[in-house]
Image (cartoon, rainbow over all chains, first blue to last red; front, side, top):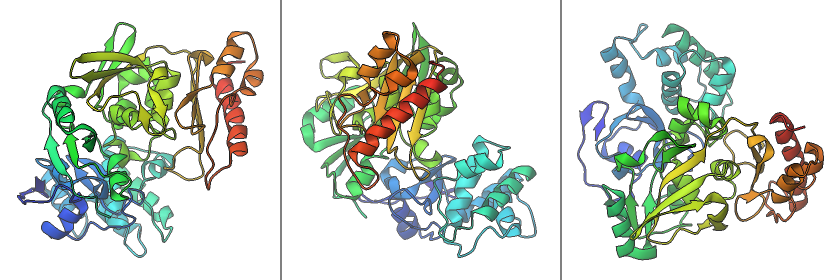
Length: 158
Length: 272
């Protein structure tokens, strides 16, 4: 598989979950484990461009796939010429910063990955559609208001 | 949580998958999207010793219009059904119900064939396919057979599929007769506490989570056909059902919900 554009080759046990593979074998710990039951979305990454909950995908199922994690999102935007702001980040990352769309930050990588995938499917959503689009991602600080604002802001820019 | 150890096999065709099922018998499970199976394996509620991955069989993922029905490949992901212009035009209830399953990330992985084979009475799509009068095409070592959805489910997470059979296609009658789907739950992304699907102006009414399988509300369907009003038919919605009890609802509450939701669904579907 490729992770953030880099080819990765590992021997793994079939029961290895994609999230464990990303964190422990590939060594990228930006993808968090929250509930471990595909409810909270903290482990959301992109698999061939679509959001998935990496606690519910086996690493072997992703053989040959292109995985993007939060660490690779800004580079992906830079390559596409869509990065923005002082940090030259992905527009969603910039919007999260500008809207202060995080409190403790634990859900944030998953929120950003889910939100970018959502905008790929619905480029100009209403506020309700954003809330429904992020229903699989939980923020236990309950900071949804600014998260929704950030997604709407990122949608306006792209 | 980590599943119990298993051997992982990749099938490159339906025939190869069926041959592997024949070889490993009931020790083996097919892995489609994995969004029901993998959580069960993580909880160790399921511990197959062989997983046969069918997700790399490209020719099981399609949506085609055929004579009077849509033919949908078993590996078609929920997100493809949800966003398909063809499904939205020809079987709009199916597209709508697909959009209610889990959340977007779950729908990127889950498959129509997988959710039917899993046969969870609390799932949305099996009940939708049941109300729509869909047909399930199953392939085994001796060829294919067509199974009416009404004959498919046999018990809690059980179906008529043999150990060496797999779903290859689902056929949905086309039509835009009045339809509605009521999913009653308390939190986003939850399963329905009770759900009701109405298809084809009330000719098909199905119930979610009202027994050990998805159910047809036969008494209500017959009453409607005999001239009863939506409100009268809805009173019969739970006839013959034996809903389970859990932390969300007892049987009496589920029975009440089935009647109320059936009336709402019928009225929203334009049945007076």
